[in-house]
Length: 124
Image (cartoon, rainbow, N blue to C red; front, side, top):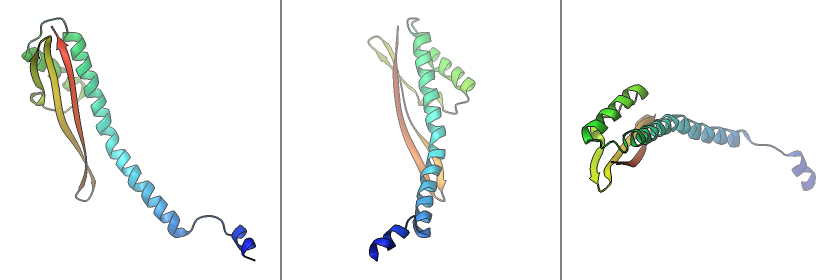
C-alpha cells in the first residue's frame, strides 16, 4: 500500500512553492539592482582603455588626462568626480588608478554595495 501512495504523490506543496518563489524573487531583485552597476563599471573600463590608447605616446600631463576623462564622462553620462582618480608618475608615463564604491538601495535600510578598483598605465 505504501508503494502505491508514493506513486500518487508528486509535485510540490504550497509552502515549498512559496519558499521557492520568495528565493527567486530575492535573487532576481538583487540581479536587477546590480546589473546597472556592472554596466557602469564596463563603461568606465572602456573609457580608461580609450584614454590609455589615445593619450599613449603623446607625453600627456595629469591635467590633460583629467580633462580627457571629464570629457568622456560627460559623453557617457557617468556621474563620478574625476578628482577621485589618482594619477601617479611611473617610470614609463602615468598610472591612472581609481577605487570607488557603488551603492543601490535593496529593501528598506539594506543596500547592495560593490567596490571597484581599476588601473591603467598611460605611456609617454
